[in-house]
Image (cartoon, rainbow, N blue to C red; front, side, top):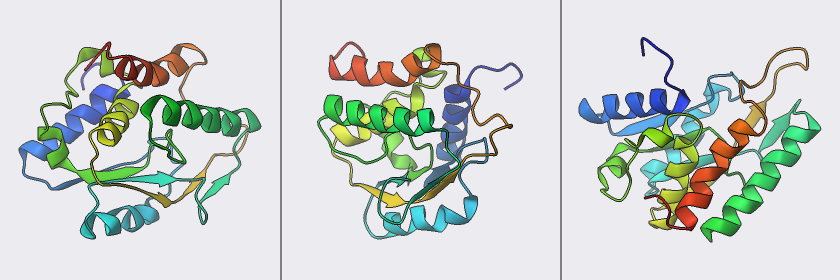
Length: 179
């Protein structure tokens, strides 16, 4: 975008770009370099085996979380617990930004990524929540997520403000305040 509209708006533009051009599959990975792209085939393989949405998980057996600050590790586990509780579906890593899925999911009228409130960090948890609640064929696969050395920035997220942005789709959708 010519002007920064947020990570959700950027992801949405990319997804609809692919859908408009007839692409079948999208892969989303962290722009911060925490998810090594050599793992992409691990996300794609289950799609060819019948799954529709595959999420990378650092917490599955075979997955790894390297160099993560303790508060970050605790936070992602706490978020996953709350996400699973509110969604009613148990998953291991709700905050992983490493996923692959069929773009045809976006044609489902019950999934509306074009809502302005999804322009920031809300879009990814919104999509995951919808996929799980609508019973798409979902699978988590083990992946490695590597945080940079402590003296480097590993996220642009701001505490509290952006934590709310990540959690509000879970709350709004579970309470039927948004669609």
